[in-house]
Length: 349
Ligand SMILES: CSCC[C@H](N)C(=O)N1CCC[C@H]1C(=O)N[C@@H](C)C(=O)O
Image 1: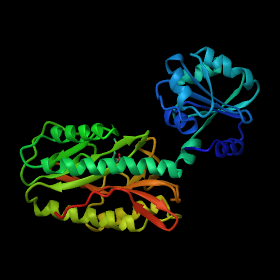
Image 2: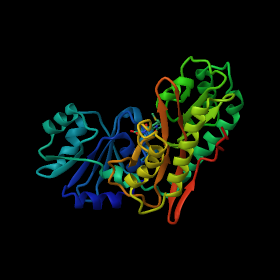
Image 3: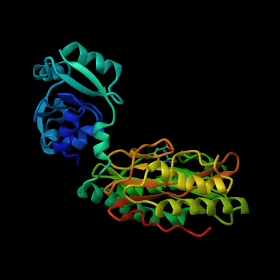
């Protein structure tokens, strides 16, 4: 949960008098209100914090919100907020507010609208103990479901049916499906986001499975690549290289480590194996209310790891027309290094 006091300090440092929050995960982080459908927050001026939502969510907002709730629909929402904003500088979330949303605010507010990026996202990157617990529980559900479904992953079974069983398992355990389940077998493994298709798994395939639970609003994320029968020597070599990259990157996780440097650890190993071009995405990302959030573990990142961050380490190698491998773990960055939260074993290939 993002501390409002921290945000108020960040707002002051950013040189604005108030902040209009419209990104659903940021609204939830600040207030506890979990409906992504209609929730906006005005933080400031001063200590005032108001959640705006409409009358479909009156009861839910009363139950969930830690801040004052005002039930209204636009344009009344904007008119209500306008009263305290005359002549002030109000930050808006440049990465989320639409052009139409900006026009609406401009019409109703006699205030200077200041586009800002990543203010709340930066605070959200460090998880509270309660948030870590929610993610830990989400990952434990995913580990359990994976173990239940593992025996059915064999030749003759459709990718879709594997995905369906994973989804059912998550639902039965009281979790939601965190994102579209990726089951990419054989040549489809060359697609990093190869969501499950009707393809029937064949003997000799590698099968990449990437899925996560969402529990109490928080996500888990894990990928395993499994062998069905005996894969080709080439794909076994690729698997070994990706595993080496993953293990080296995990071992390098500690507070103070630059995210770009961590990406370079894995990328360097894959380059030495001739797979630099085949590593078609970033090394990992933060996980929380969103499946992808700060920090970004990529070449161009300027972020630095800190204790309390929950991140993925997920190098991969993708060979079009041949197949692919990805191995992903979910980690908590701790004061003295890391803790791996995803406990599903990696099978020998
Ligand atoms: C659609 S959610 C996918 C979750 C998955 N574990 C994941 O984050 N993946 C799969 C392969 C690449 C990676 C990803 O999407 N990374 C993003 C952050 C990137 O831009 O590299």
